[in-house]
Length: 259
Image (cartoon, rainbow, N blue to C red; front, side, top):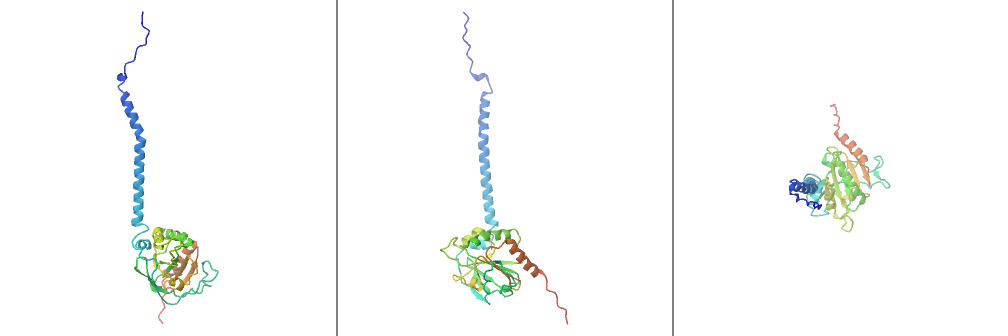
């Protein structure tokens, strides 16, 4: 009888591509893993480069308030004040004052000789020969905390007119209040203007007639008050006032004809 039993297949050695197909499949499964590892590595490298660029050439550039704050040795310092104190800020006023009703307008700002966070000398001098903006800040003031990054962004955009000197004063320092110490705050925000430290009694703030925080005093090139402001100020409003003073300082005085 003829056998009807099906014939058995031989081992797949006859398929020379079977092993190659398995190898290809294995490698193809590894492709997403390799791509993922490369992507993660690129992200890490980019992040390191970004942080390095910020620390080396960004907010902590040598000579800025933030850079000095990183080497802080003190949070308050003694100050020497000369000249006449500014009148108190008009009661009930907010934002920039009306120059026609502010008794400080036209008066020369007091000279303040003091120090910054690392003990270096720093002076607010009415005889500096250029328009000045003096900003009084308190580390615990929520409005100051909101305004500082806005002002710094405005400075970083190059909107501060050339020739206008900005000096900030850290005052009303209190270790028991939030956001202490002020040096850490200034450093963290990358604040570029120099920071003069007031004494524990707020002598500089009192001499300038400070009503609250933040407090702005804008002068002309002769050190005379042009305008003052307190509280939250729209940066565009402050910019307009500074630009007006800067443009006035840039106009040469007309020569007086000889008799």
